[in-house]
Length: 212
Image (tube, rainbow, N blue to C red):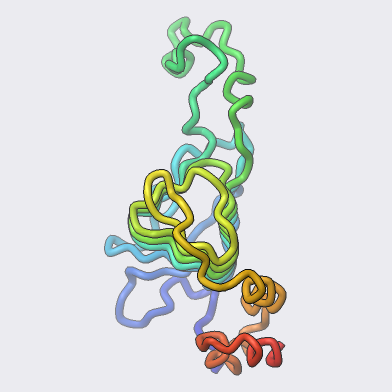
């Protein structure tokens, strides 16, 4: 056997609170890699409705999540549609209420604040009820602590916590991080990952490099 089937939405037999997101999510603005899962006691099926806020097609931004990510319950990805126009004297969204208030509204005032796609790397762990703000990139191997509010990019293998989230430490020294990013075990085929689980779970970077 070479691990669970990444196309199985419920890979843990006997309980359905953990689900692989790729087979569960079908949205043109969301891309999710194999084996990334969402854990929710109410079930992972409503990940988009529960965890992704203000994702509007007219704005064109995307949520991209890599492979082997662990996403805890209550995590929120706030997309660019949550922003209000900041180019005028008021931030109130008069236009959304219609009845004449939409007259003269310029969508460019919203587009001016768009920060681009929200991107989560590979092997990222996002703790319970963390919030990821629009346009943030989270590097491979990073950890986002529970209840953190991430408003800026997170470096690979960094641990961030707080509101706003700040880097608390790096999981490894810079040279080891370079070597891990070069190995990129998350891109290996399932058979190779299965053969080398002890190396991936262990602490010997040289052994992992030899497996590559």
